[in-house]
Image (cartoon, rainbow, N blue to C red; front, side, top):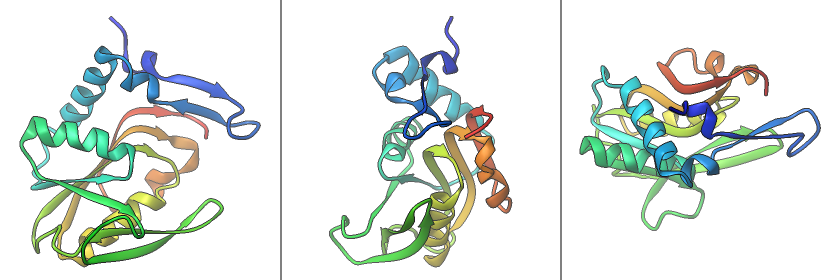
Length: 174
């Protein structure tokens, strides 16, 4: 029986020398791999009490939608600036090479709702922190963050030390 890491393709020196790129498209294109990924992530938060799943654009939508469907939970979408059609709140955050803005509809989270943030990758933690700020601006509570892969060398877990972090796979390095 294959393990989850067996479904990940590693591409050395992409996008620059010294980086080991962890390609998750190979998980998505294998039915057994996708099922194992979703089941593994779901099991990690089985003890957690939350009302909504917040999916980060774009691969967080895939994992978030599958989990929301399985668990019969609402899925809240967080998108890049200008992509949502209604009134939004936004937060600016730092990227490795610049800045970006994430947005959420103003009525996506109700005060007191408990949220689980879901994304494919925990690197530096900037995206997850920005999403947490959006949830908290609307009066919600972030009770956990769930990732398919964590790159331990980028220290995102330390940056997000105030939150519960669960990662299906942890790779050393960047």
